[in-house]
Length: 171
Image (cartoon, rainbow, N blue to C red):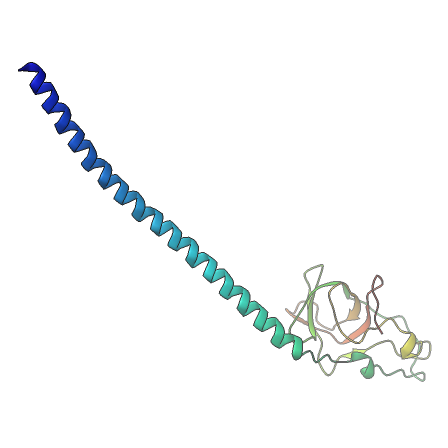
């Protein structure tokens, strides 16, 4: 009788074990499906983000209208000669979408307006073709200029004397 009870306990235990294992396997399969769906969502989301970036880049590539700033340089050889005061100086680290605002490596934010004079003028000024002034503001360019109000944020430039990239210049 004792052997019969032991065999019955083992059968009952194995049935209970089977039931527990089936429940655990179902839970594992559900977790596995959730992980797979999460990976699919991340992959699809990444693909959509890449597509959006590509479309935006393509649109901006076709709307590449640059402003040629060298046309605004006026050299007046009759003006009195003097030393120029420079209180805007640094290297451009970021250019705004308008192409006329930028941030310098010292953190100064500068805005160039239609009233901003560009280049060097006066009787000792070189011709505009020889001045260190590129047609656009771009990251890496060395900037030298002057403003009336250095405490404003952003600073509105009165004069930009130099806009030049010595490592990769463009004319």
